[in-house]
Length: 292
Image (cartoon, rainbow, N blue to C red; front, side, top):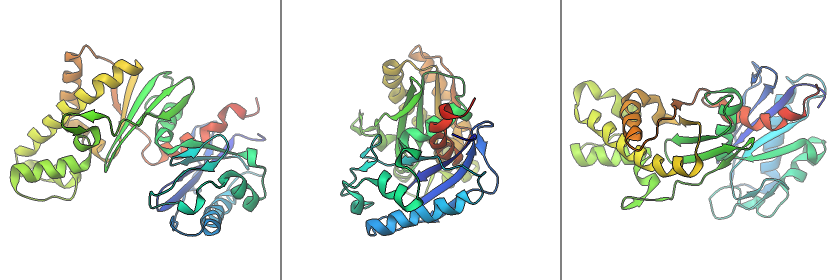
């Protein structure tokens, strides 16, 4: 690399988000953020051109010579060679078996080896280790608690999808109990009332004592799930992000007590970077390639 700047990208089912990352300060370069809607069910050429248009725009804010790109991409995907394996997921079907790396490089008039990919689930944790709540740690596990349950591990310098959302848990799978839908379903069971999300529950805490008990139940479930995860991975720290983590003060204290009962006393922290984590994590794939 000719400088310490790289472009970090997060590919979602309906958007592409991109920003320039200063790898020296490990932060987003102000004014470079671009989030644009993409029709993920469109033709392959249209998807690639949509992504390329965003990348070109962000590069207009970059120092001369900056053309290195890190991309957080959903799976299945061949992250080394840049070939999509996504099919039947209501997104990017048109890219199935195509070499996304070569197609995108051709559109941008750069070499394919200037583009690197990382699994999107691991990307958030890669960012938190590189620049956030888990910086300077070598073995980390991370969860994103929101609409679904994301899980990732970091070791040997790389973050990967742990894919534990579907792990058997109680009478179903982990995501059934550790996501927004559990809160919505459980609250309706105990109150007869419907709420759209966890934020709405938090807003009712002052008028409904049952909500505190709901978070306590969630804490016990989360600790039970984390027990096996921690024993398998032996992390130095646990990072928890996602929308539910915004209410961490309501479940972290009991979560830590429940983990202690399992002889687990490693730090549990909230993610620090928010949406920026995935972008920083993707760009950090180029960190080792800076000039000395």
